[in-house]
Length: 159
Image (cartoon, rainbow, N blue to C red; front, side, top):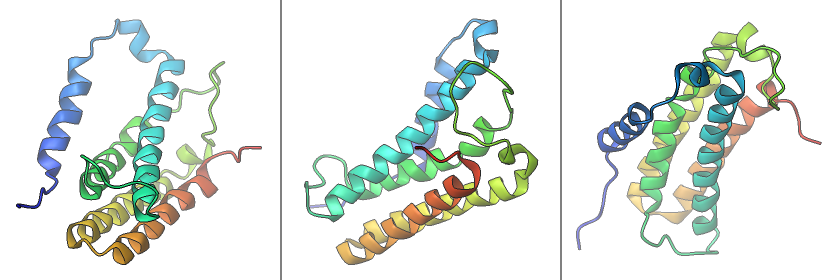
């Protein structure tokens, strides 16, 4: 049986295609509430992939139809989008956000944290391709710490 491998190119093309395929009225695309919602959905997607991988590593579920490496590859692709979706600070809006203004006042630090997530997720892909669950678990921990490092600095703590 041939092992399925993730293809960043295919995943990236799908992500770009989905983005380009959506048509928004001109005003709606600039609505700060929509910008914030889009960012939140991206971040929740990353969290969902991390959560599903963690469940497999803990033995709570089997990998099923989506191998860990595919989910990890999705995190890599999504992590490359983080800085682009945070380019603009929508300023004061009625929309709820936990993004701190520090993102924009310390852009290079924020960009470094986003790149750190991408690097950790790439190592998670490599560990998943190796198939050693202990190595995958360790890589999940490193990737989770990369997420947390950004959240600790650039996200308002939840009550």
